[in-house]
Image (cartoon, rainbow, N blue to C red; front, side):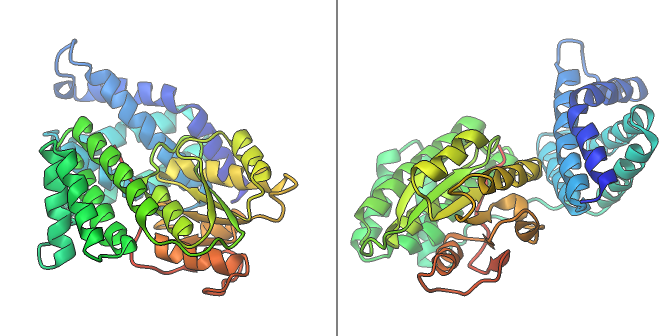
Length: 375
């Protein structure tokens, strides 16, 4: 990270809310048709949207990876289009936000920010497509996933649980049910929320049901003998999504590890204490959004400064690293894994239990990326 990028990123992040307000005001002055009526809350919605964009922009600048912001903008365009917002509105909004940056930021910082902005605006000129459905009906697992999700959407948690437990009793391995049924169904629920086919409450019910079933499957699945190693797993501070992390933790537990799953949004100081208190051999960290990446870096740095953290192996994953997995090495992690299977293989190798031998900061290939809801 060069000094200009680091400084620009800090300025953008710290001023995000104020800059977002300026941009929303400019947008409504230039395009009053977007204002709706005074009671609609349109100003606050656009300010919130702009503030989120600026947090993602700050991460893209800090890591020198414009693709992170471009991906966020394209995701936002799909989200707004599904909600009936004029397809041109986001481009107009980004132009207003770019204008606010040019006016309010120091010249050099504004220049860095606007270079990334222009790439993102250009990306909106390409035709946007809705996310593809995650479930197919051309396989036993696909049909099971579809029936499972249907039961959840109908509010029949008991039937959803029974479908998965019946499959487990029929001999389907727990790991296959995670990878080919539960996680694809959860990803489909996220896609449906994005496309306004279900609401937030329904998506949350799906998440809660899936996490409950994971707990059941993990407790019933045959596990290897304890290997004497401890995993501490955590979503970084600010990350509210941990279903992919839960799958990773469960796979380690089934592989004979003692697992301490801390869940989502764990403060850095408390996480560092947990690494020492539980005598962790491996720390797994999850990041969902680009805005979590600098928190990931700070977390690893803080862990490394502690007595236990100096030697603990650090494994990272999550959607935010899909386009920037090389940041694992740059931030001081020992490896990156894209899915639970790869995480266990690499984790075992890192602590000397066999598996795929990594280089420091190496990656692990697997069957796909861990899903991370964006709702």
